[in-house]
Length: 110
Image (cartoon, rainbow, N blue to C red):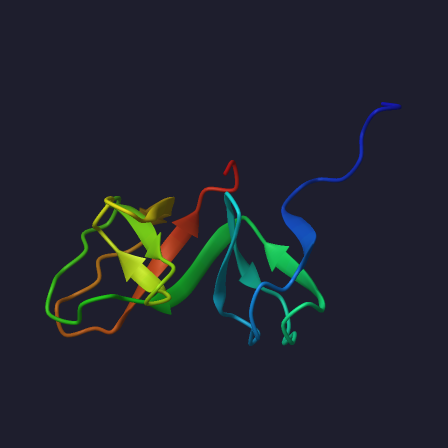
């Protein structure tokens, strides 16, 4: 196809903050996971699809498999609260109340 640009599972952006490899990054409407360390305003590759272990907002709640999860950009973690947060995908495994992380299957369409 003459109009094909790229697969779209990664995208290059300008880092909105100092970022470490593996951290979640909200860039306007896109959420991805940093492929490598990048200082603020440097080039950064975001992975938009796949399953990633990300920090969970509250270590006292469970997040069942398949639950929609959102990114709280102020606290930089995953939550089940939709209000003022960005939908990023679904829980890819049960996260128990005692766990501080959750496996998230990213939805690369936003």
